[in-house]
Image 1: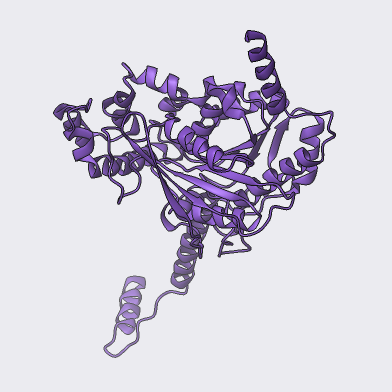
Image 2: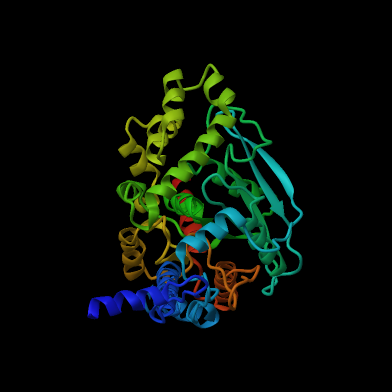
Length: 447
């Protein structure tokens, strides 16, 4: 009888015209799934954007000297909290991508003059000269000599922004255009820029010293440019003549040690390696006729074939770049081109800046500048929590400011050094003056 009752109940529930309803538990289940999906998305956003990471002042490594104390007091941005844009600024990848692909926001377009320098091997180096937009606060004639990152030049957004800011602070600016980087400038010899070749930068510095005999120099290098300027200053002590200080931002210090890290997938470093290699291939192939077609070229058809199939910077360096200067092996090329073997010879004030979340520079490489700052009294090493690779954007929530923390730090540090040199007691002469006097007395003895 219970079975018959059940069938009757079912029959009553399925009469034609009846409205079927979902059990009350179903909407609750769907709402739970939506909440779970939203929570999952938020979790990944928080993780990917690193939103839980705190903001903090840079980690400063330095020896306690009067110069360093003065610099840190006179350049307070180095010791204050760096605050990136709230929603995306704590992601090193987004900081790097915004710098690399989107450039600066509303970047200015400073007006300069392009200079051409004929090198001994027939190459034609170029740099752009930008006059200051006012007097420097010390009253001195000071020139920023700037070396951009890999394959970059004076027309890049981050360079234009920095140059404009420096001009407004009373600095003349000279920006090296890496050999082969400008698409509208043909190569005049079968050679282009390499990781550590200082020839073009040295020619630019020599030209500035000759054109402006009274000027003092602030040396600035970005990424690969940081390696070049530090190597240049450390190669020969005379290169430090009339140099007030040097600033290097986001360089890796040792190509040989960085080689292994560039093949790792953490922080997507292997992907960045592939993208940079692809960009280098485009630059090289745009000068195919000059690099592979000249009689004096060291390149062969087999090198061109291997270039097409290269998927990493190391393959390009091994098959193409090392041969410009006659290096027999990739190891030899990386050892001789890296500033790690020269940077300890720099005696002028030196500021080294890196970011902890830089996806291109592995943390293991940062022991080099930290150890150097612990040993040498003229070195300050600043390591930020955020900033990516040459990003260092600032802003409230979403939109970044046109001027970055990096731009402000370089000019702030340079201003502090200029004031230090201007107001230090006469008895405390600069190393450059002492070096010139020693050289003079040496030649007097010879005569």
